[in-house]
Length: 451
Image 1: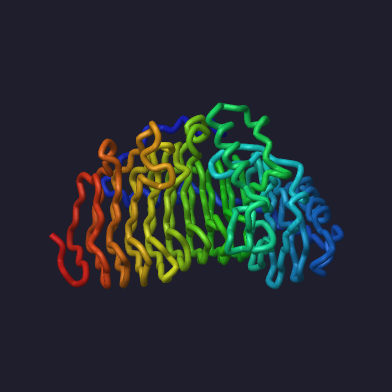
Image 2 (image 1 turned 120 degrees about the vertical axis):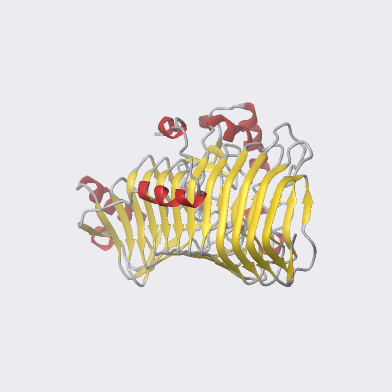
């Protein structure tokens, strides 16, 4: 499948870029499941919140898969579990009143699996819900997925002093640095083993190299880090999901090196970016060289977070054709509405990013924020390319900046267009460094028409 994704046909040219999303949506084939049901309670699961149901859930998934697929049903009640590994043609359906409580013991997420951690492939802790190389899979229903992460479990590994972390406590930093180094050296993934004792927190949901994925209706709380993280997938739908998780790196939805993705009707209240589109980090991203492309975001609500719609910083494989519309964002703890972050170590490209019909109550920083100086900044040999960003019909009632656009003199941002936008209660003028082709039409800032 990976080879098929990389060998893309010549792109179609659209007179209006907003003609493209309907074509993307027509290509997205949602999974369909047989009507068979496999209640986890029929395989030994008990809704008491303490009995380990990991094996019972695995047995239900195995039986469902062997029968040709269907729905593995989590009925009302509190079920304690370790990692869940989905198989093709299986839908994990959480009925009303159901809660899956995930084990806090890191050893429960062994043996290590093939995963991507902050844009780098390695053998690491299993994500809480994981699928590798599967097709036609789902996680649906109105129940709750509770990762049980907090300032005692998982989150301190980030080194958060506000969680009580102190020098000498376990930290992800040494393993993270080592993984970065191994990727730069081109070490085989099989030699990048970062599970027990490495303190690299697992993601909550990670379908890896999967097709036809549906995540719909569920509520996700208390995640160790990234919550919904499809990697190298095609045809992904994330719909009507509620995410409320305020730990470190608690991004809401991070499609990475994926093609044809729909994120709609979701509610994000997060400790990091609400949506963060990614495509691999540094040498590992360039090695795989698979972009994220053709991503449609609509009718979502963003509350707390570092960015409402974000691209990067792990984007070395490139990101193109991102469409965000009809969203609502509002929180004093939401930093930015549209955020692009990169540097000269990431390299890569971001092109064709479109936002329209978005209403913003307030953000604490900028409405549109593009920053080439994220983390390593200019200290690298790979010049990122960012071009063709268009924002239309966006209103914001309060922000520090309307635009914050900072690029390198050797790699300017190319082609930013703002049309029919209104930004009120803006504290400071836009900050613009090395921007070419800025077009402003019918834009009012603090009541003044911009020319």
